[in-house]
Length: 170
Image 1 (tube, rainbow, N blue to C red):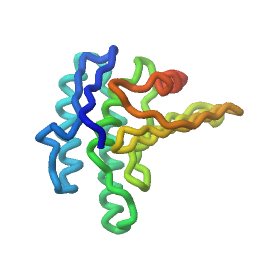
Image 2: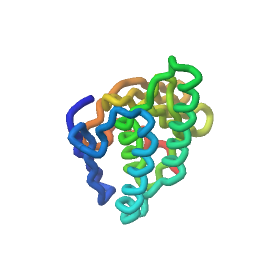
Image 3: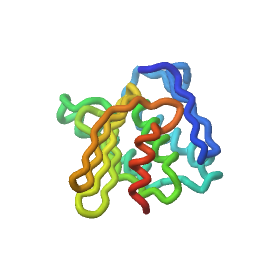
Image 4: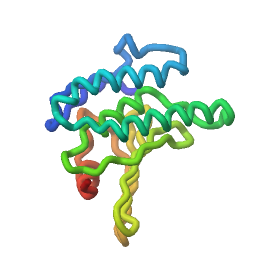
């Protein structure tokens, strides 16, 4: 896991710190992953409500997907574990979406990475896979145009991803 990230977005009156130095995050108990995420959503609800950009539906959809993945993992141990850090980054990305951007569909990949997807007309798709390392792998398809790549989360959503997300308006 990388060092502490201080995440900021110009559109949000929110400052978020993610890192190993957050004492309330350090636990060896993987069953506390979902509990931590729920507490974090409550904290964000208050902070983000000031901006009017709280996107509750995708956040709750992501928490449901994490719970389903956790239950499936008990049955199929080859599934990867969902890490809090990836969930935090996904919540941050969802909260910091530009005004007018469509909400993503949220899920969990087999390896435990968080998946955010946008669907438009006629095969217009953007898929982000957010890893606990801060790496975001993306694929964009629109007709004959396709683009794939990997970016690392810095102190805000990478500019290329924002450009692609803005192509999906609500």
